[in-house]
Length: 187
Image (cartoon, rainbow, N blue to C red; front, side, top):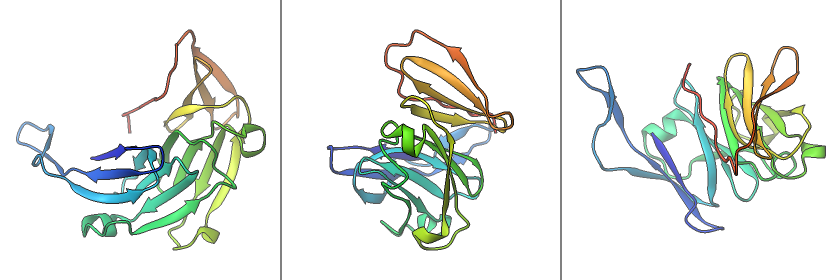
């Protein structure tokens, strides 16, 4: 389990807690100790793929990746810069749909950078190996949860579902005050 801590507007941390299955088939913290895996620009959101790689967005408009190997050996700040401010502006939602396929929301400059964008990464160690494509251009968004078929995100007090196949957006719920996060655990 990872915790993003935006301690100040310019600095933050990511902590790693070890979780294990216990005898009654539930997840439990292995201990109350943690490891510091990142220190730098304030992290906004994070997601983990099925391999155990960690991805996170930062307040200074970057998306970074940590390999499972680096996390397992606790190599602090062994990150790969996957996207910068040429693709990311105000990212407060990031999620992994499939291994190597991340989606993220932008809260700023959505007319040019998109409300919802996809980042494909095949594991190379530099920013030039990634591919970012705009999936949807609409209002600023925060929060993001993906399923096999849809991306759920919040914008202007509403919850939307964007369907990956038909490229259509549906309003799911309205009248929220200030929604900031969406989660889905059905994988």
